[in-house]
Figure 1 (cartoon, helix red, strand yellow):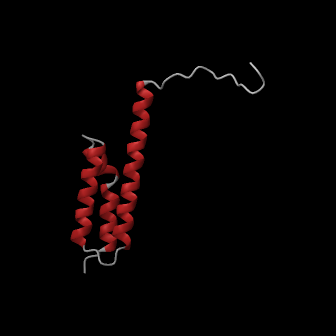
Figure 2 (spheres, helix red, strand yellow; figure 1 turned 135 degrees about the horizontal axis):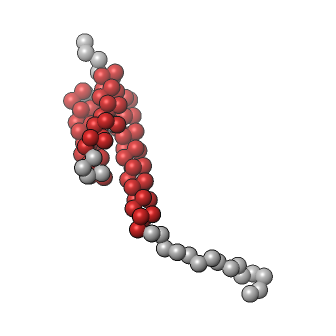
Figure 3 (cartoon, rainbow, N blue to C red; figure 1 turned 90 degrees about the vertical axis):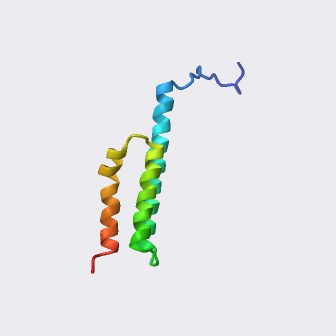
Length: 94
């Protein structure tokens, strides 16, 4: 080996569990970005109606369940209260 070559340790392919964990992290990050964007739109769009905001929340839930099938309870416990609180603050009852 000359001075320009570096020894590389053997590269092992990631295990299936590591691949699944990385996939879950990626899907979770996508969901977090989605919820953040939806919250920003609901909070900042002056033309948005309460009906449109509710529809966005429903669409966000559908997207979350597409990313995480069978996790309805997790969405309802983690994200739904935040989204509903934002809608109540943005559209107070008159």
